[in-house]
Image (cartoon, rainbow, N blue to C red; front, top):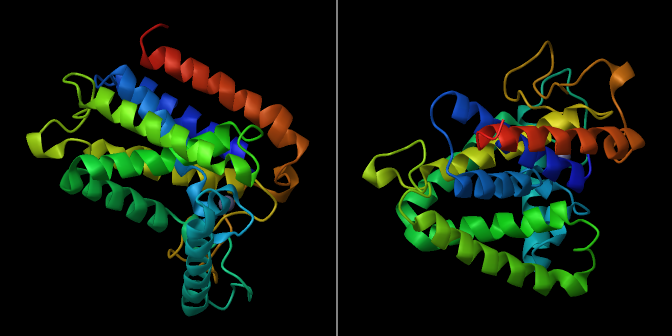
Length: 264
Ligand SMILES: [Zn+2]
């Protein structure tokens, strides 16, 4: 899928988690619902850090181009090192290492660890990176063009600052789900894991599938491309994505949000 559909599905997924959490007795304060949905929308772009043309690789100027090249090389190296007989030869790392549950879990665990040990600046950094991505993803057309990069960064920095202040206030959810005193912001890793997994599922629906299960082998393949039967897969950026999936994500997100806030 393309950036905007990934972001929307990420936001909708977190709102769905909000609804489930409310049903199981851990309702999210509204800042957790909002910030989580934005982080998840941003995190749903992150696996494409292995692809030069992807939104995330263009979002932070030369820095993200550079990280993208390293991630691409690393992914390709891991692919070659762990390939089994049934896995085809490849000449790049796109849709390999960063599109697995292992990567999602590592990223989320890293963010949670940074958030509980690194204090306010770590939380701000996590928020900033994901706000930039959420803006690029959700406001796709408006945020395009390199001249608007600085505006996006400013907007992201401001909103990260404001949201961190709101979350910090007692009762606003810095201790949502994990209530021990040294576990504040531990939950920040959850929307990051969820966003990456939702991205992988979205890619699995497209023609080439997605090796989510790595390193668990399926048959003679360790990089088995998970996906539905070929007949119901679609091409990234096709009308199915724009005219069917995106409105469905919006609708599901709306329902999830209403349920999470106990409006319905
Ligand atoms: Zn992808």
